[in-house]
Length: 80
Image (cartoon, rainbow, N blue to C red; front, side, top):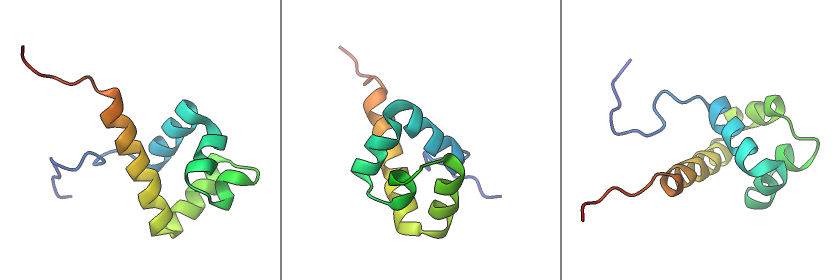
């Protein structure tokens, strides 16, 4: 396996990403932000993972939102 020191998603599973977003925002917010059926109709982690693994554009949107959340949550480090 290749080292990916600059990839912020390296070592994080899609399931962990999705679970984190659901815990932080809920299914309704996911459905509003990324309008796909697996988030709007009887959503579950399992069905969403199945869809996201087969649909690169949807997975990219979920991963992008996760990264955005990470950046927002980290306190900015800076010297004064």
